[in-house]
Image 1 (tube, helix red, strand yellow):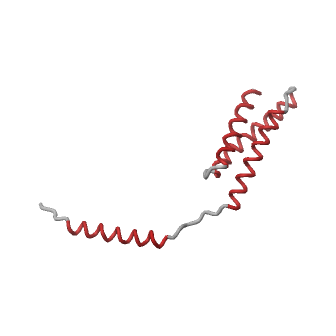
Image 2: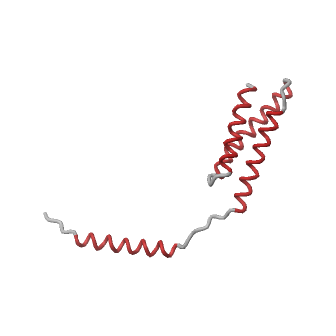
Image 3: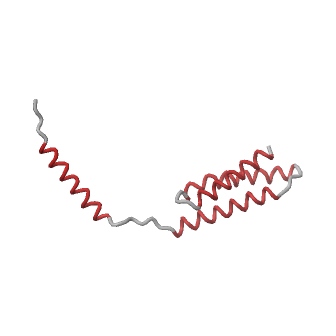
Length: 109
């Protein structure tokens, strides 16, 4: 049980670190929660049995780092929408071209 929690905790903490530095940083919340829960489970096991605390400290350290990156990116990175006028004009022109092509098609019955 102890080794399973340590392995799952490390994997989810490392996955959270990787996801929080990519544009998919909002998905990093799920591995952060999983790593945090594994760390809490290890803390409860530590009270019952004599377990070394280094692994628990590393899991919590990685979790806190990824959580801080995720919060920073959520607060300070704004999603910018580019110039939509060009896209609207392109959409209108492509619609007109499609209508012209449809009018030019002759269907023989």
